[in-house]
Amino acid sequence: MLKTDIIIIGAGPVGMFTVFEAGLLKLRCHLIDALPQVGGQLTEIYPKKPIYDIPGYPSILAGDLIKNLEEQIAPFKPTYTLGERVETIERTEEKMFTVQTNRGSVIQAPVIAIAGGLGCFEPRKPPLSNLSQFEDKGVDYIVRDPEKYRDKRIVIAGGGDSALDWTIFLSEVASEVSLIHRRSSFRGALDSVDKVMELAQQGKVNLITEAQVAELHGTDRLEHVGVKLKSKDIKLIDADYFIPLFGLSPKLGPIANWGLNINKNAIEVDTFDYSTNVVGIYAIGDINTYPGKLKLILSGFHEGTLMVQSAFKYIYPDQKLSFKYTTVVGVNGFKE
Image (cartoon, rainbow, N blue to C red; front, side, top):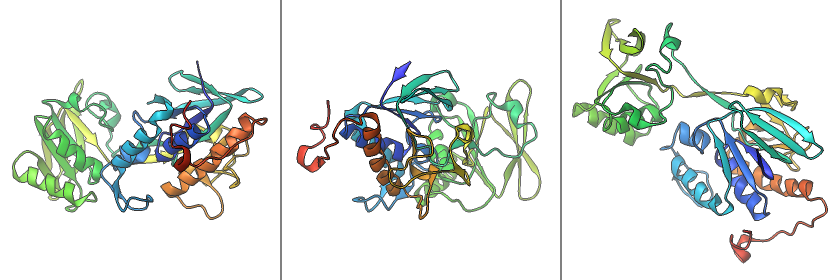
């Protein structure tokens, strides 16, 4: 069992920056996220998407922002539990919570910061009658290890950044890549669209637009994908893997059972310090709600900053909190 000062549920940009602000107060943090890597939506859904409202950056790619945050918090040595979802939170002592994940990991801390973005993410699945039959037998919703598809025949469905990015990447890994999209235009970055079009012209990608995957065929595992064309005809494509990339659907999941005040799938907080109705539990970022709430990354950064000030006073009520500017002492001055 691991013990820390603050358990941060959600390793997106807001949760990550909170590690930095907590580190300035010499508070240790452990991040838990259901996704297999840090970054939340920015990593999982649109790593190549430019963000324009981060102070000091006229434009920064979502993936690059996450890399910068990783570098920024590294001096404070956060610990992680990734690819696991928090199932239960129990107050085991007056000032101690015990958190357990769906895979049995147990972490203890006096403070919990819920930075779960829009909640747990579940893949949006296409309406195919036998889809579940091929899950883990040729149907994947997330690309975790590209080498898995080395020299395999891949069918990708979708029209956003993830579908485009993985089509480009896997064209150099798989023996054959087909991209199916129900429209003739794409929602992703123009540069990615141009690259996919170029790969299609070179014969490195089989691009089929105004079509959708309608059938899955196979015995013990996936063997063929049936694509419904604009003409209504069904085109069978040999496939080892089908990867539908239609985004992720946010759900509160187990958060709804933790005794917190919920308003329209968001956690109500006090804007003084972003505390919830449960003492010792805070909520920051898109997961919370209050009058005037703006769902912006920079707003979450502000919320996390104020939250750790309150968390320090809660953990160490007898210690005086001395505010220091990083411009004066640098980051090393805060490290133990």
